[in-house]
Image: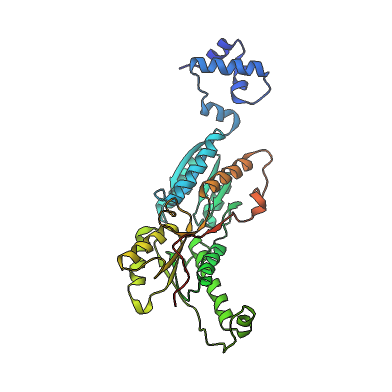
Length: 361
């Protein structure tokens, strides 16, 4: 295996100069650097990351903690992270995090403690105080994308606003019997993604109820005058289910199987859950959107195939931004709050397709 001394000999420089030229640390004339790079390429020399880490204290490796690997959203996020890390010359070590118990504890207390990583990116995980403190004690910068927990740097969309926008879209179409398929645990974890989207759903319903029961607001909005009780309250329900097509399909069958109590619109916490609801509606002979309007969240790669109205976000771009923040925290000018746009929520937008329509009389 070629050594740095072989590169130095071929390029006609000292080993120290060859090392500086290949590592980019220290001044080397551009002509000399090119000669060293050419020599390394000719003999197939690859710098040892272990040797470099002894000098710099850096491993050029970032640990990524993720709850699932078999979904589109997390796959897109990982692709964005990987591309950004490779572009910066970093490796990635992936940890598929169990929900709880000893296996989860081992990820934080053993693997991240013993594995040599420079920083940790945590995706859609609700971190405990102990998990955050444990990483901070080891002086590893933490960047969270979504999830909850008191981490120094966090990137996230505004999930409550997402729930509000999705529900308002259905309400503006005239739907008054609306269901929200929330993620499992939404009620027990109000600060989680599922909990916040459910809270946004309730916010929109409460505001609509207030408008419907306020004659002055109705007149201001152009509605005819009448008693405050003519319109009645919004019929809304929140059902928790596992997020994904199977969870959406199973919950959809239960939700839509009783004609007397069937909603005319469903807000699903994710697009994949919405896909399951659409399949359940088809199984029961219902037409989307004539009999049922459906809206999701994510803008999944198959959302257009399902003609699904959705709240779009950009997971690959979120992954790229997470790497940008992590590398900034590793730099000499690291700041206490390195979030882009001073921590403003990441962008989302309503994408209207054919799965939502005005409520029929």
